[in-house]
Length: 213
Image 1 (spheres, rainbow, N blue to C red):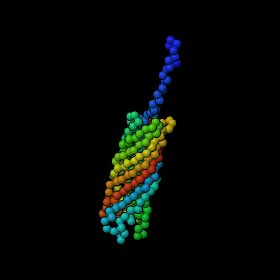
Image 2 (image 1 turned 90 degrees about the horizontal axis):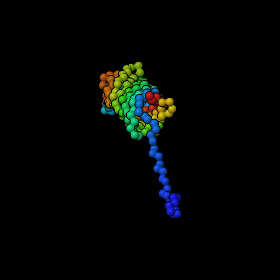
Image 3 (image 1 turned 30 degrees about the vertical axis):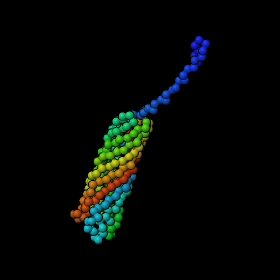
Image 4 (image 1 turned 135 degrees about the horizontal axis):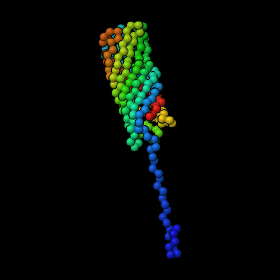
């Protein structure tokens, strides 16, 4: 309180404004990483195609699953709490399916995948929540064991979502969930036109160690 001419004048209390929340981690820059994947693949041929040896064509396309290893690299820009960028992925897989049809062993396998993706995310300091999307390719192999086999490159797109956390020394830990969808492709295993319009889909979980520089 202040005193003026013998009178006591109360003072207004001082109100402290709360400190604003600050982004302390900058996501701008390049990065590379190495990851482990687990995926499930599905294949389906044109169901109106003629039977093969008395069996429906899709009996010869078992769904598959398996592990893979892959690398990634990209660049981020950080603006406010938004992070955006571009990245590339390449990976080797063993998403194999097996079946026996009429005494013949059949194998399907996605052996490799690659993609270029845009990435958009929201940063909460050292944690980034993001989505990705872009064009993708894969190598699909169809094998009638001891009879014939064929490998084809299929094209399509991938969409994904994930979370990344920045640790010490420039290292980050990242997890992705991905859906890959590819255009139909004819496979001529055994004879031309045997398996028309084969569609391939794949769902992957990926965990990666990422180094930022």
